[in-house]
Image (cartoon, rainbow, N blue to C red):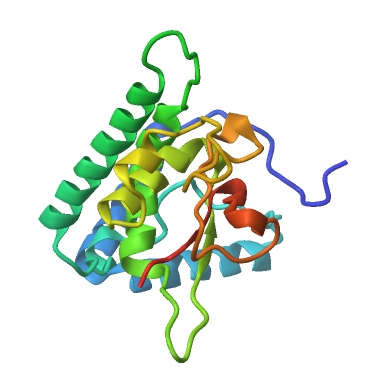
Length: 215
């Protein structure tokens, strides 16, 4: 039994009349704006309820952008430069995974996971996540493990990881070396000896691709 009543599926008995109503509403939106259209819709619902028509409540909305394009605030920054940087990050992530899989290593790397989310991470790093400062402790980003190649690629471009470290992706090396692979091999994590804090960060390991936003 549904907690919220809903109207049964109906067949449009007069498609022309329906289209006329829709056209009228569309004209109001275009000529007088969405506020006026919303007011008219509310008045119709009010009239329907007063006439005894059961108007079911629905908390669900259409799966569309709730901000009209003309009201969207354009993001700050140099879009062309950000796109170029993102291309370099994708390239370095791909190169790291391909180099790690030379021969018969079968290390994998889930490169498509990062490629599909590169813009999401890029916008986060460029516009939302903040580095430590005198008045702020800094953001820690727990990255989905399979997306770690892109995070390492960005760190490499920032000079936080060396080419030697990148070549040890998903590989164990001597404990005296600068880099260790994380215990969770499937995530393909590296160990970073500095700037890593929080649960599981012992011995410089990077749990779940924990990443401190660089200053």
